[in-house]
Length: 443
Length: 161
Ligand SMILES: Cc1cc2nc3c(=O)[nH]c(=O)nc-3n(C[C@H](O)[C@H](O)[C@H](O)COP(=O)(O)O)c2cc1C
Ligand code: SF4
Ligand code: FES
Image 1: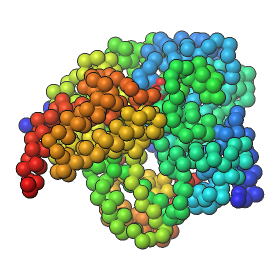
Image 2: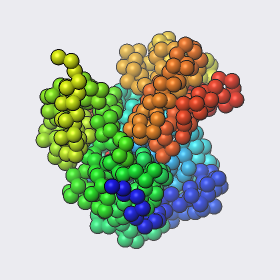
Image 3: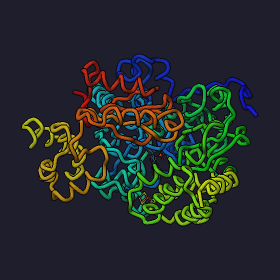
């Protein structure tokens, strides 16, 4: 069966990606950004002079974090204890979730939009020092960000007495150095403090005890890049976009076996078909779709029958047993061996495990090894049950979603998602495959 | 040992942070840029700037793969084999470059996780400059361009030079 051409063309709703598309040659420069309205929202906020009004707009907008956990931004800010200073804003630009490449684009091609969002957020929560943690590998993004900060400082958008408002904000950029786990917010804080990037036990949450044990808000690059638009449109107007509790737009990083991979900004409430076929042009060579990962590597896979499900955070979590996670959609066609994909994901988690919790440190390695055996024809009949058992030790009742956690952070349990997906869609196939391998082994 | 210029830079970096210890990673990058890798001699000096022991600096830097604690080529070629690259030829590029540069001291080829360049997979970086939509032949030609100086390389930390 082929799934080609079964969708109407579909259009993006460009809000955070508008400038970078409209000004492909200079969107990242101060002149290009100012010519397309950068820092207007900041001026508006400072002229109004009421930090709590900004918080109220953020809450009214229904904005939920775009880093992967989908938590309400306004609510997160409200957890900061009153009257405890200093406090910090920490920007998460560590983007390492497999097949997620939207924050890199926003950093490289619209750093002033991010900076404007950072100053607005800092004003809203009344912090005077913000840190941007940029993934170490993003050399160009880092260069452009440093340049943008210098230019914004020269124009009085960062630094002392911003635009004559009396508000001060300094921004420090901190480069990561090749550790996926540092995207997890408490590991990120450890890394910023000069430690090995190992997650902390929560609570206390960063809002209470974060960077240097001070109240801290950690927000994602895309989340903060959205703020200038929420200010400009008004929170309620923004909330009219999208569906239900998934308001606004999301930059969806589409990759894999599609004709036109890339970043597409879509309104929540469209369907996976709109994204994969309407925007992505469908499967390459008009092959059949085998499966797709709807939100990065860490959540359960979906298949053909889910194409018409709405792209909505709560629907994904409650009805589909998965998550829209980091906003990546990875597509695999009929030529793909699902065991190979699951093995490579397990290898990733095993490599990136920080080693603090035993189920994750040991379990991810075991999952990788067993899948390797199945992949290369060395498996024994009990191996598939064994890999499910290991997954169950890392994430009890591993087929359940959202996953259960026996570990300090969700990295370890994430490896249960590819295993659960194999068990759900390909169990019989895999068991037969192992039996066939057995038959080939001489007695 | 840091050059005088780098000592001045190191002091500025430390001053950016509320606590000196936070400067361990940026100072490790600074030392790596100066030496072409992160040699053991750099560790006590970073420790001194950050007001911690050498063991603490070692503990931190050994966590992060971008700090090269063994000598590496002047070109670090990072080839992605994570799942999107996996299904469109990433492993074949890795193997090709590994074989080609096995005994070339200028070039260190490494396998890396997703580089956030999956929209144009398969992808690699050379000293953290992105190169996308590759084939083994195109990837090799790019490395050759860097070797011959036809492409300007960043440092092995990705700093422009
Ligand atoms: C293993 C792991 C990796 C993560 N990586 C990232 C990342 O690269 N970028 C990011 O913004 N959030 C990442 N997160 C989520 C962060 O912990 C945090 O929820 C987020 O930065 C909060 O910002 P937001 O509310 O604006 O989304 C990761 C979480 C986990 C458990
Ligand atoms: S789950 Fe894994 S990555 Fe997370 S804290 Fe435990 S060992 Fe580290
Ligand atoms: S999977 Fe290779 S760049 Fe993302």
